[in-house]
Length: 257
Ligand code: CAA
Image (tube, rainbow, N blue to C red; front, side):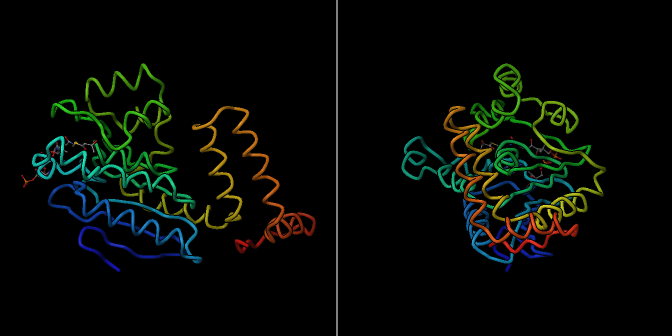
């Protein structure tokens, strides 16, 4: 299932995408984004997949968008191609997504991680938006995601200065979920993915939609979506199974229907 710039496999109902341009520290070119997005959409549609995991290698999750490719761009080529629009499709993935970060997650690499629902990182991983040092700025959602995660003042400070953010700092500001020893990142990410893959899939999906609404909508609208999703959960067999298992004092077995 491998493609030009990503490796793809499945493990225990987890769909795994590994960025694979090691010589360029997994710098993300257009082809790679297309491959990542296509594969995420394919996993999102596959019944047996419950969680999607994105990772890089030991040196880098991804050191940014491909600077060589970007050097060729003009305002018109960017306007006509709108290369960052495809990233929006990642925000529409319904299943839980996890980024497992070792090494560098800079610029577009940080943005890819921030598009995921959860981020597990090595304690020596390096995040950051160095775009300002290239005379540009984040363009694939970085200003939005980081501001939502850490607030306006801190986000401006980090993006204006363009300095590396340690994994500990990222954890402190609530930008990532967990840090572990570098050699344990994959194991921890898979462990978390497995835990999620045992939860009721429809509930996971409805919760993701409601939490997203908390970021995008007013409190009243968000509460309406939460309420509607709560009611929808009662249409699933898993609701029946979950409550019956509780009564019968046994673990539930969720099927995603
Ligand atoms: N694009 C293209 N190639 C890249 C790259 C990138 N973003 N990041 C690293 N590479 C390449 C290097 O050019 C180098 O290739 P060669 O061996 O052919 O010279 C190879 O990867 C290894 O990199 P270094 O030799 O630089 O490795 P290092 O360990 O000395 O430094 C680094 C690592 C600090 C991450 C450094 O590579 C670096 O600063 N990279 C650029 C980071 C960056 O500016 N990212 C933002 C890009 S803009 C963006 O992402 C816009 C957006 O919002 C979408």
